[in-house]
Length: 445
Ligand code: SF4
Image (cartoon, rainbow, N blue to C red; front, side, top):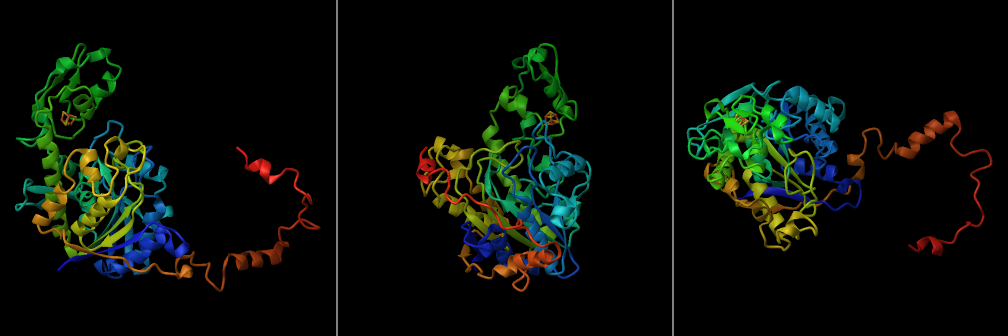
């Protein structure tokens, strides 16, 4: 049987057709409330944006999901996990850095109306080992304990491109986003005996040593002391490497490591993600997870980067489903049918037309690998039915709880006016009878 994916587009006509209101409606249409019962703790898994990224999901888009959970009696908490040091100034590498960064980006207990928790602890060590004996590549995964211990999980994803994942959606939000720090090291395969990047050939003489303006950061970025920048070059001790994915700058920008295995590593990473995602869903229980995806601000790269490029596709809308694979397939299929945005990376890479696989071309790997592998692992179905429910016309259902038809904004102000007399100055507002400039003049450039 086909999995159902519920969808509403991004067009706005009135309050009930705003994106947050559509998310609330789709939450109900897709039955996400069936993932938990009153009193259950519900992890709302999202990404709260890297330092100086501006493409991450706006706080209101997460807040309304917390509100829905509370409305149905659940106890929500908004959550994410600490990151590997992918980016040397990554502001989410410890829980304290992450919470400070999240507050700067607008995510606090006050704005979310519920706790904001980093689910793998201060340094990312708090996790549950998940056996992946049926994994295509991985044998184990490490799921953040806060997520593993929740009664239910609502995975709220930002659909867009991703440099390593090809695209970002539900599968990646579960595979990497729900992994603890060592879980992330594991899925990134840096220490894999065949494709791992710490086994790539190394030439420390390509490093300019202390002459390079970046030698200080490069000398300090390896947590294990495996990479050292000396006076005239770099040294690397592979026996110390913990596979943290941290030396991207000397690897990719300076080419200290040969990239003979790059294609193997980057493509198998997509399979490893599927192993982790499928294993985590099985561990948590399919019946306890729901998915909601915002396909807005479709940038070529992820929200983990410290900046945001021009979107490559126009906003698509909001998706909701109980099936992790089906929801990603629906968003990917829709992205294939969309036009690219002029002046974006889609334009540079000549994928502007409907029918072209935008993210496959933009990020250089097939966008279908992770959903195909997840489907092979039984984590969801590629076969789906796109359901497009009618948008509610009931504006009052989505207003502030104190602003209802019998008590709209004007009535609130009217009550106050009775106390202080209103805003109109004595004798009314004064105007020039005839404006001192003609509109025709103002209409000219
Ligand atoms: S050498 Fe290993 S431990 Fe050090 S930064 Fe690179 S991946 Fe991380």
